[in-house]
Image 1 (cartoon, rainbow, N blue to C red):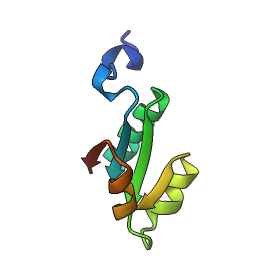
Image 2: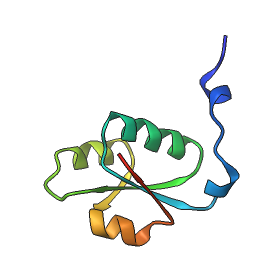
Image 3: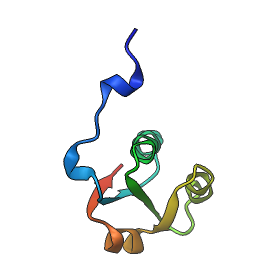
Length: 79
């Protein structure tokens, strides 16, 4: 049996970086969770009126407006 933790490894270049994920689709949620579980700082960037804002906060993520999130980022991922 292959365990999830054996399938993926966080690349060294992500260590110590703040990653902003723009959008919180199913894929974005999974990626954000994976990064968070691997001690990578994640910020979710959304529009203030986005219904997923509260979902991302409930999932334990720091959520900012799109512009604020981009300004804080070392790396940006769009979902």
